[in-house]
Length: 229
Ligand SMILES: [Zn+2]
Image (tube, rainbow, N blue to C red):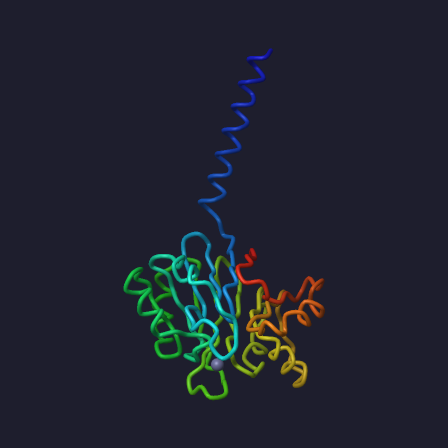
């Protein structure tokens, strides 16, 4: 009787372990880590994608980040930039990281190469859209389709027309002024959920108050926060 119980337990534990292993190896879940400003780390465990990171810590009075964020950047990562303002991009850090850990960087300057990249990775495409941003001649926003999920990366653009032209977005990652602009212009935003980024630290309390309990809108305030998509 006792022996039977033990055998049963061993069987159920190994079955559980097997299921868990299969679960990990076939994961289509995407995790997003908020680093600061528009700096995000997205991964499905295989692809490591950073958006608007590395940037210059504390630039233009926006968020600082710990040095350990640079150290923990993955090998052979993809880096996607919306533009080259220093609160979104650091040439110096990027150069150092790519020297140590390889990786590929994309931005408005080589956005045509995103088509080739998309062809080389299964279940992963990045579409690029030229968008306007004050004091930047070259700014792009992106639509990432990854394991069937549509993720829009707005960046620093002030205008809601581009996101407004897209349908069935799963996750729209936008600054709050895109919501204001859409509202003012009567543009409908077809997104299931919104992550609101590029908040300055002083805006955090009012953002928490406004969206704290809202299931559709989530402000990115706490650096290091992880969200599953
Ligand atoms: Zn900018």
